[in-house]
Image (cartoon, rainbow, N blue to C red; front, side):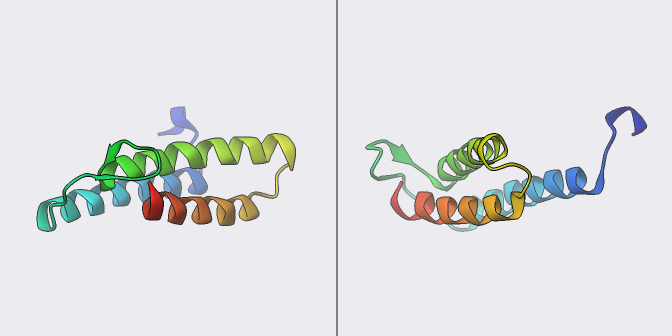
Length: 90
């Protein structure tokens, strides 16, 4: 895999994304849910909220890099707060 220039942080990132997808698939099979309407006024399921969280976290990290710089661990804290808010209210 030398052509992809994998690093440990990259491998961990994609591993976590894969584990999230597997976990949410198992949750959907074991505990089916009905869509709910949150503050966005659209019906969302767990998977929809996960997608919104991942997309928003990507933008948060890009903005953090552009505004603050390379101090990314603090951006992770912001992303976790954002994720909790999305899963609670969206």
